[in-house]
Image 1: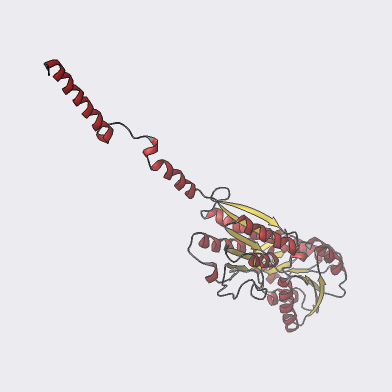
Image 2: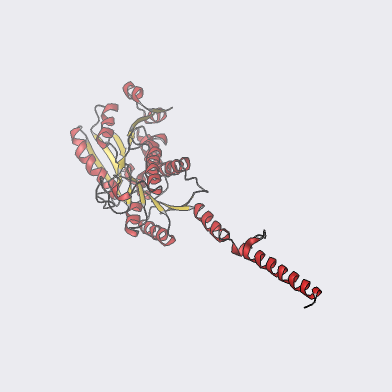
Length: 347
């Protein structure tokens, strides 16, 4: 081999070795996108972190008390890491007082695979509990979830349901009739005989009334359109008592209209009815009850608690609320001790 040819062969071999080393990663060239495992894993992780929860809210009917419970629930979640429109979205559905519609709503939520259900009032709570045993259900504004077979017990609900009860201090509320008018003998009460929540309250009122020297005169209805006629049918009563009955509370204006015309005071079972024109209550605040329910929901969403083991809670702080404007319309003079003891006075 001549010298020139030998030189050419050595050069070719050196070049080949350099190319080989570079291809094996010894050089400084950057890896391609397809060779980077992070390029596919990162979007999946980000998607998981940003997953938005869906909470279905089912409400038997829209009125001030139930609306306040819903607002309290949403406000608590907004303030505690589950902001509406960011970490959570809500699907709100009203059954408009119809049980068949409540059942359809519950089934829709199950089909949509929502992450949680808030059931406001007894009929919608019953429908939700029957529709699913898997999705966590928070109930509120339910008077007796055991009697209505929504949960197994107040202390240990079992299954997937827990929440708050709006059981009100019925005897103490009827006592207000006597404090306003010591000579009162008869109290009229309108209630929906088809709502288990209301039937429970009437049974308690029947037991409490005689102990207070009162007679209970009942008027059973089946829907809100019958409330006015029922209120007008009372005769010789000294007061009207309005329980936490959704059909009656949604038609509260008609009760107040009849009562004001006859100068009969209306005693309510909760604060929103007093704010809307009833005379007085010693009872629950539905907004606060909703917040209390929201607190329970956050524990479940964070994995800190299981609905089956969370006792049903009741309102922690009851309040005396009086409406001075209503007193004028009813022609009633409120005893000073009630005014002085009120947590809230509607002027």
